[in-house]
Image (cartoon, rainbow, N blue to C red):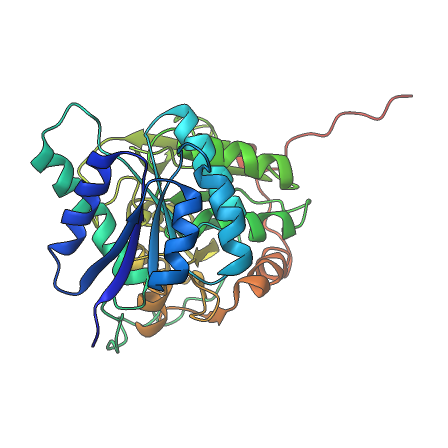
Length: 366
């Protein structure tokens, strides 16, 4: 099989060298060219025909956003990985790039580390993405079905929706969330694999377009029906049962599945509190984070939806869940919101007390 062809675009010579050497160390990857700005990059794409492009956010002459706009017109399906700094500005521009059609992103190593440390960061962060987006990543494969749902458990009315997502997630959520019913009377908790700052910006942008209230979880807040809580970057989010209801909690415990926040951490605690009233949703993403959490939801009688392969940027996370026999339905992204709306409104609702009830509405002016 021929190597994966990558074009590296960055205005900094040192960064181009770091990325090129990190990628070239893998025998399955060939760096077919570099470019110092967007206008050169567009020419090189036509010449080199790469499988994947890494694209710097901030460059002279033609920056990453402008390059991406041109690129999406001429090469609409070419995978593009944005490279940004871990700053407020870098995060904001990266979110803009994802909205314009960037496939994924990485954050550049800080300038305080050594050359070798920076190269290792690029290898750890970039190599799996390049392989996954070129469809050369190891497939989720055929799995033996895991433990079946315990006998005698029947699905209860949905009392909480838990969503796990990674690569391709911001765009998937931006399509899914605005289609949810504005009168959903259950809380929604989300783990999206993202670093600090990025999750807050994601929450703000979703809140502006979603009929429900969306926020980055702060830890300690009681869950409210009709509200959406996104785990902050760098922290695991879990749920705790308190006298007043169910609350979020945050910690910086060890990574799980090389992730923090991790879907499995959240899903375990959701399943332990809500049991068969849980609706788990696994969307596009690399790896298998969420598999064990879905197993616990399944064993307790909850339901699980998984995104299908055709609509996923990477069918890793939902693929593992589907092939383990844990998904009640495997659906294209554009059908998942309708299924959530149906299940969350299906059948009589249990009497919900305290924080799980819908917040009181303001009285109409007389």
